Length: 226
Image 1 (cartoon, rainbow, N blue to C red):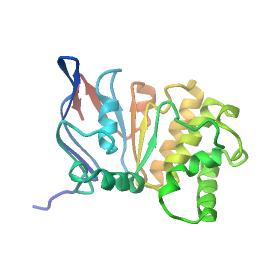
Image 2: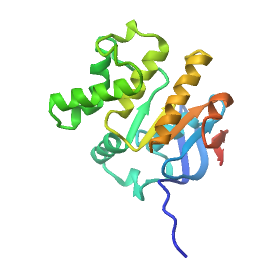
Image 3: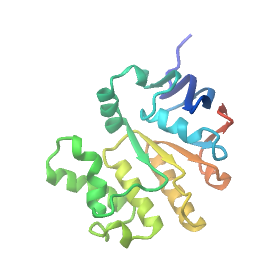
Image 4: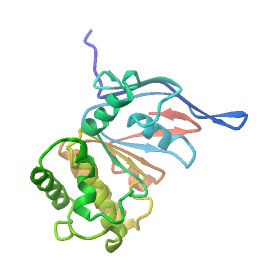
């Protein structure tokens, strides 16, 4: 019998936080897989454990128990430096609050993940301008974040996540601060990136946004239901 290798495998995952004298289980028990080029919505209410799960999948948050395998690589058996290398090569992050540097231009913000790549400045500029065009901001590379709308800032965050051409995009409530029209535009952009071969994993509590995904994983009270 042929063994199926999934892009991402979550095995026996648990995450417990210490809060004063008591322990809080953010993730009680989770097991699931994600295949290459899927568009996954991780659905659940606030406090259900979905953002914690995303941070663990992105090699940012050490689980209390269990494994996260990406291309059969056990993320939390790696050193901190190896995990940082893994993130820069494999993962593009889109955060809920955009996390743009206010005094840097669109172009400078998008180039930030390339700081560790060792490429020449001209190549970095070219790659950054390509993804800025890809997200529809080709006329605004020298604007500062506060000169952009919320939807445009989200597009900058997506361009920054794309610039190193990572195979996996992780997005935490990417439409949470946007009006419904702009939110749908952002989800359609993520959908088109999925069509181009990126594996997209979006955390959302909004079922309308979740409908853009090809498959949903429901998270409730620290457990998941694929």
